[in-house]
Image (cartoon, rainbow, N blue to C red; front, top):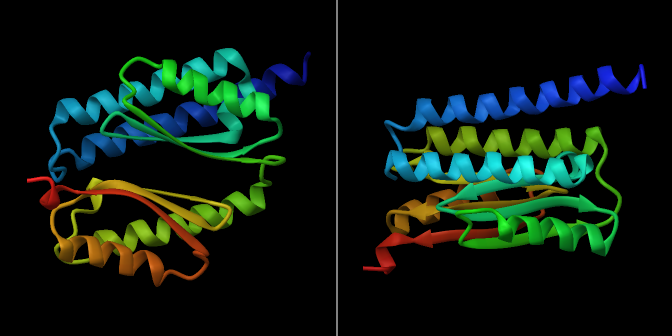
Length: 190
């Protein structure tokens, strides 16, 4: 128990730092984001509530599953060892207040090692940087997640040129083996 408590505090601290970073980055990007502040805040609330609900069910869920929320839609990535655990995570996501849709991309296998996830994080950071530097792309309107060299993107494209620029940036990045897009094209919905 003496060793478990410091480990738990360290993991909880890392989770809080990550959440604080996400919330802080939201505040910094709100001025550039085309979505309403209330929508962005709602996504943050859904993310935090879902993380809390997963942690209360089984602490490993928060460590093994990455949660992305955009426009009240939840995308789940990561690796879970059993079908029962995967089904429970999806069930908790659907039961979280405010969730309108759940994209389940959880793999059925042993959770990834730190080395594997660091490569995924590097790929995601490279793409985010490239999108931020790409003219006529509102990079804050896209959520990028990489899991096991598969890139997942959520967002809203203003026009076909922006959509093409985002997809070109993604596909030209070294290490991306597959792309799964949940990007809505707002210009087609008019």
